Length: 99
Image 1 (tube, rainbow, N blue to C red):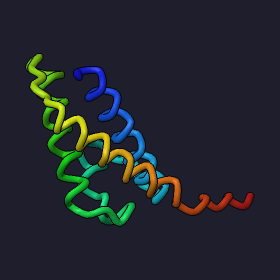
Image 2 (image 1 turned 90 degrees about the vertical axis):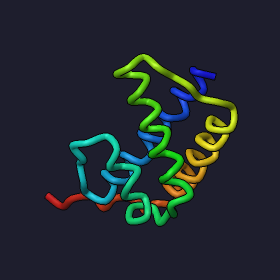
Image 3 (image 1 turned 135 degrees about the horizontal axis):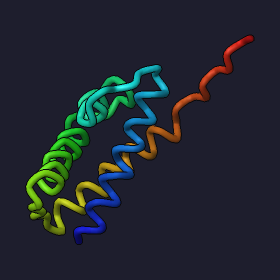
Image 4 (image 1 turned 45 degrees about the vertical axis):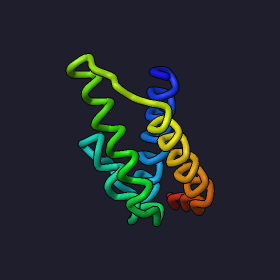
């Protein structure tokens, strides 16, 4: 369960970060990539709230050594990650810069 959580969280974060960078931004804080999902990918609060909750869980693990995830949370996380992945796949190509 722990590995599934960490792998899904890392994938979701990487995808959200890619979406934010696609729009030309480079965040200085990890959590911001989830909070701006309505703007970067048009995803609603039902997705970013799951990811935000998982971010809090990830921080508890990293800084306090406590991981208390259940099957429901991991299932919700994977579902949210899939929604993000679908939207990222639909992003238009980044135009090449002319020299």
